[in-house]
Amino acid sequence: MSVLRRRAILAGATAAVLGAPAIANAQADWPKGTIKLLVPFPPGGSTDPIARIIQAKIIEQTGWNIIVENKPGGSGVVGAAIAAKAPPDGNTWLIVFDNHILNSLLNDNLPYNDGELTPVMQIGRSAQGIAAHPTRPYNTFAEAIKAAKVEPGKISIGSLGSSLAQIFIAFLQKENGFQMNYIPYKGGGPLYQDALAGVTDLSVTSLANMMPHVRAGKLKLVGVTGEQRSKLAPDTPTLEQQGVKALPSFSWWGVYAPTGTPKPIIDKMHAAISKAVRTDDVTKKFVDQFDMEIVLNSPEAFAAYVKKEQELWGKVIKENNLRAG
Image (cartoon, rainbow, N blue to C red; front, side, top):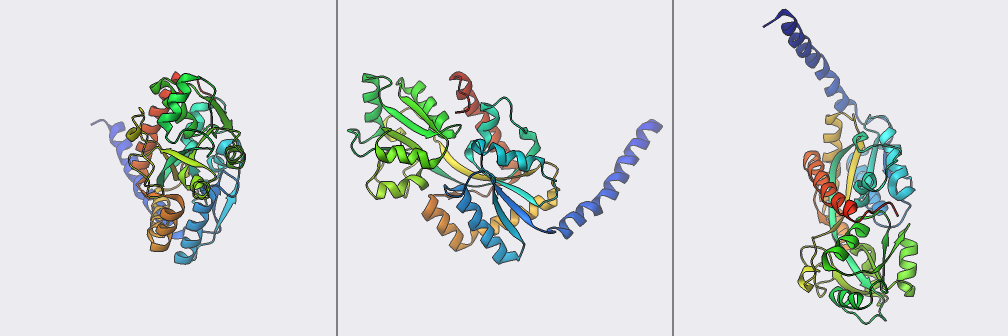
């Protein structure tokens, strides 16, 4: 072994030894000051209440000073950019919806890049629902597809723009050979306003947000996008059960941190969130209110999941020439 090589190895070993106390101290001293849970959407919807339920339970269990800050705009881009540029000291965490991983695929000029945010965990997931206005003649999505093939482009279908629902609709149209008039919305308020008024024939959103309107008889659930029927709507068949060519598609919620946040701090926050979500009362809220399947995976498993999802839906985006909407 050369002298230079031996010196390099010794230098690396020394740095590792000297760095170990710093890493340990980072975990021991954290948290310091106020912890921010950034939600890149306005109050309402699903991401905001999920963040606030977790916030309240962690405070109850640890006494930590945690606040939720809403930083809406650009389908989550504004809040994600703020988190990406925040100091990686463990005081900033980003609570995202599934559309977060699509933003870099749909936009060429984001104010941040994916590498500036590090995956921490997926909290949970929920199937999406497809609903029709009660006056429409179809009772399943398969029937709507049949009508769309007779009159291409006549039936309208809406979802949040730049969302997984938008990509999923494009996928369904291509795989099943039909064409609907797709309408993107910038928020759940306008989407449901038109859906409830019958301005749009169909709408696709998370079941959590849709079911109150279905139970009230103001919308008619015609399909769910999961692998199996939802506990919230056991009488509604999945798309595959209806003979529709589809892949299981889920709304999901996850946590990111600014890249560079020390792993001991990420591990400590991961443990705190997991403990909070696993308490009986929080789990019940998430299952009852959001039809959530609790996941709580590791940072490594979440990163692998995100990579797989981006590859899958990135292909659909490219094949359909989709852009942010």
